[in-house]
Image 1: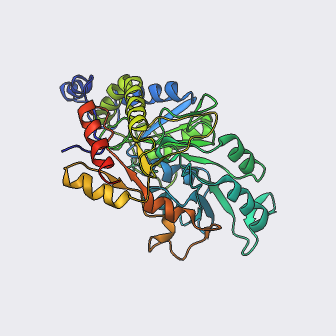
Image 2: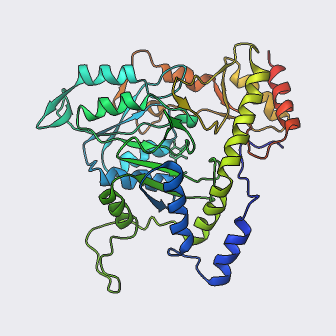
Image 3: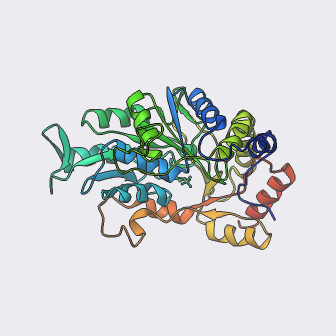
Length: 376
Ligand SMILES: *Cc1c(COP(=O)(O)O)cnc(C)c1O
């Protein structure tokens, strides 16, 4: 069997986890949590990093910190994993789905600009929808598959309207725009260390920010808002969203290997691009100027995506279709989906992610290529 993408645990994971077990520091405080946070801050260039139990929790807490609330709209791309839309919904706000670009599969910024011009106005310093005066509480770009949109342009559109930006950087650790890492453009950025991400702690997440007050607030809200070191006094309703030390230990070991993982992901991506280039109508994700991608999950776009999926499956090779667009899910069908000709739908039906585990061999890569070519 060739899996889609599985964790690569070839470093100090065992040693650091054993250290937690030997010393009894397995729970929510411990040196690995601090170390993991420090390494994430260093790697991304953010001033502060706050560990969380997973990426979804990180996204939720950031919504709350940035003041997204009941009846607000939060703008998200229509093509994303469900967690983005769920995190918005937990606050009582409504995800407002923005169509994506057919080639980069990221939120379409031309469309976003058109939306602001045609559908919104400023009222008391806030950007609201013309039709019902409901506030645009935040924009949450998702760096889909580690690619990005032009973050300078997005930040300009947001800043001109006083709208906070929370980056869903869960798939893009190691990606950058003009040399600046994802997660550091908006007020806050979120990462995930789920089993399929570029580094994994089994389950885990991280919030990054350059603002000390926001970082403190993130720590506070993810740790039950306790304000006294000994007594159980809390100053608001918060969450138990901590990352435990034993998982942070895995995270530290994974961070040590991140540069090697990124190199291998690039190698895999180059391999596929070399051997699949010109095969049938296969297209690769377009990456715009100034963007460096982490090559997290290699994905092709082709009218034969279903046939390829089946052919790979017969050979015990796992591939995955793209996420169903948010506007097609029953929970969000009645919500605002801003689009001109629903480009998301074609992206959804034609995209297929193919095996790209950090540990994959050349023989396996060649076999995947062979099985894909058989479909044309
Ligand atoms: C993985 C992922 C998340 C959520 O991360 P978890 O750690 O699994 O909660 C959120 N958004 C996107 C786009 C993701 O791919």
